[in-house]
Image (tube, protein in one colour):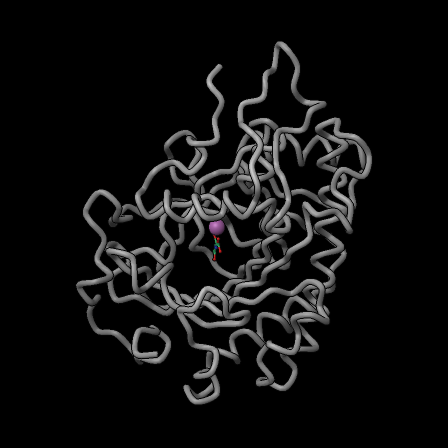
Length: 336
Ligand code: OGA
Ligand code: NI
């Protein structure tokens, strides 16, 4: 509990253990807000929409989705209830604070506080959210609206993710129903509330280190800037678009697409004056699911770039490689 940033009050200086080695620091040069990461209107004509989504996923691995059909009120409520949760007195949060990877609903700080060399400027509440009836009983009961609001929100994002994956599968030319609601590939869904407190010196720290998401696809709700995407060795700062979802391709979808869609690296910078709260929704396959490049996308001219694996094993090696700063896909690559 003593490790959480949110229970420590205001910081006057950055504690030594949060100061990154010089080569990893974001430094003082401000990354301008980027105008090129596509903002895609989900109500557009299907053919155009498919084209835009595939183009953005190949080019950037990231895009923003507007007119996605999830009510503004629900988005605002979920952000509000998330902020309220972190504002609760410590005793209301204490039972969730844990480093135990098996605990369903938990608050922890940084990435893996006990094991990492340098800590990151973030606290997070994370829990599974699908199927709802298996998980909701472990969620916070304070604020009083938490379970209702988050339950409604996560169910809506799930529907949106199924629609979006259907369009992606059309765009890639996969067989119909490749990503169905019931499919093992999208069996799991996690929600994280990321809480990035103001940081006295953002040039020295990061809220999240450079990483790409391990899962299939992720949705992020954000109100202010801080998220940066790496493209051609340049950091691009994502512009906050009101009520939009930031969508990004994870490693598993990159592999299924046989490298066509990009799982782009990204990071979070801190802010000197403002608290930043974001919501991440991660769509994951079940642990026992086998993943490999879709067979319709491979042939003699386009041989599979990755070997098949079981998700549980991949998530294990992903963690190990990430700690050792090794590219997590290398060990799955086939020699061509
Ligand atoms: C993540 C992530 C970005 C953000 O949770 O994996 O990249 O802006 N979050 O919080
Ligand atoms: Ni991420």
